[in-house]
Length: 195
Ligand SMILES: C[S@@+](CC[C@H](N)C(=O)[O-])C[C@H]1O[C@@H](n2cnc3c(N)ncnc32)[C@H](O)[C@@H]1O
Image 1 (tube, rainbow, N blue to C red):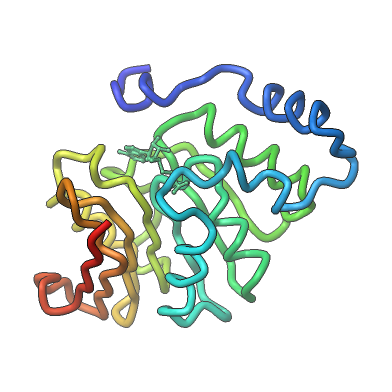
Image 2 (tube, rainbow, N blue to C red):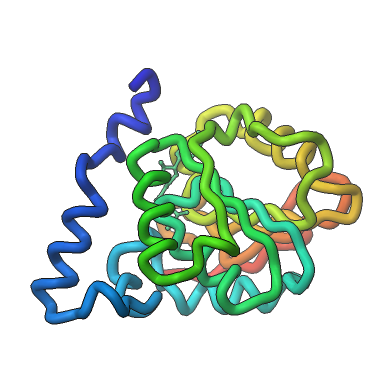
């Protein structure tokens, strides 16, 4: 692993550990729901509740969505499961991607969402591939913000939307920031909530 962030996030046999915990909780692993795994697949403040709020801010139906830094894919599965959209998640941590794929199969949604091991700073997609780029609690790991945003801009189509949920300062969480089309400074668009 060349990337220190991947090193930091890498936990081996993650899927097997999750399966073991599900069994310990008495869950039949032939019938696992998204809710059963929600305790492990949402690595962000306020979990599923905030994802539901974010999802209402964008027009998801019939959209091609990219989840940048998708982790174990909780949000990607929520989007693919609750909306009629095509979702791809990427993450720099190979173990997360492997686990995201297995979890999606486990909850029966693997035909609607795919996961690719990739760096946000070098997205493996053609220009203008996506209608929506979605990213939650990833930017604190990324120093080169210019490259991060330029890659997102490249893979979004001209009418595309970037929606993100991030911790930007010690006491502030930005609930959502939307860009339509050209990247412009976000200050005009964002809502801040003190936590
Ligand atoms: C706090 S977790 C959030 C995961 C997921 N977005 C969620 O909300 O559940 C941060 C994620 O960003 C990923 N990450 C960090 N740097 C990255 C990069 N350069 N490219 C892709 N993923 C990255 C990490 O591997 C980790 O999965």
